[in-house]
Image 1 (spheres, rainbow, N blue to C red):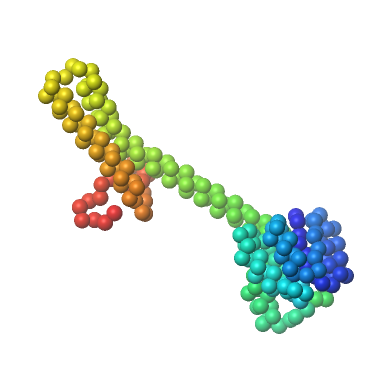
Image 2 (tube, rainbow, N blue to C red):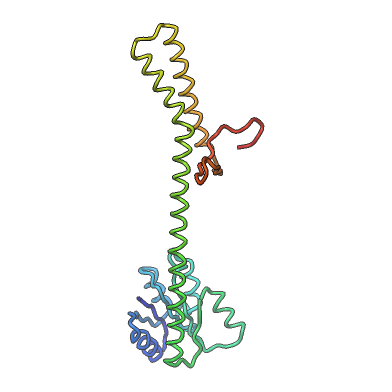
Length: 228
């Protein structure tokens, strides 16, 4: 995992970086907030560790900037601070941080926070995957329901249209029969056009049961007086 670290204290940077790297991660270190923000903006990282008080942008400002980035919501942010008290900790969380490290910082503290971060990031990644799969499943279900609706609403008029068109083209019908078949062709073509028009006008698709265990998008003509 790529980690961005910002602290104006060189010894603190080296300590935190050494512990994180010892656990198999890659650390990019910076001495001020603007530098770490530039690095994140150029290439977002999964984990960002920020000192609260440092030159240029402080840790809380960097947190706020990261959360406005297109990929900032997925980053895990830890703020390192010597400040205590509920108001200060509320400020850390309000800025968008996920967790904090209290100074003086020990290697054990860093390891504990790193393990918490890894676990929470794993849970968040699993949730995003599940949400994406659910969205895809809903999309595919919607495609299936729409396909079934087209079959239901269009197949019958299309079959009648094609049959009468073939009869007219065959030349075996009398003029009166040809006129009648052409009327059927016109009616069924208009029926199909009406279905397509209703599809374009649907704002909130409604699913109805077609057969037991099968559902389709409702493309039937609205009943008179009822809104669609």
